[in-house]
Length: 176
Image (cartoon, rainbow, N blue to C red; front, side):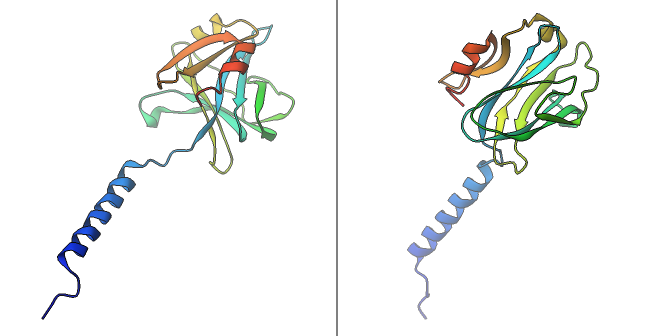
């Protein structure tokens, strides 16, 4: 009796199956990034969220304790934009009501020697922003009209920088 599948066809099937499994195992379930989050301060020292949307939309932002231990990442504030943010720059105060934003979780007091991270999101998880990490010491070094954010170079290297708002608007979306 002759086999109904040749050895050659069987090997191709196994190879294709193995490639599919490898692809599934290495592809993460991450949300694509199409915005850049930053922080700034007002003239009177209030912390500002800054979001440069590069093309699609962002619906809100969350501030959390930045920790290598996922179980220690506690949300300390969350805000929803009244309307989806589209391409361009948006800012809002994190510690008080801000026009066009609703606090879905009011900001809890921030503490010294704690690292925080701010990032943007969409309700359906279709898009997100890069995040920016900071401490209260980092915040205290900011001046009005400057933005602290994580810059990604063309070769993929990341560094946290502080630049004037105009430069942030011009450069933030270059490598997102």
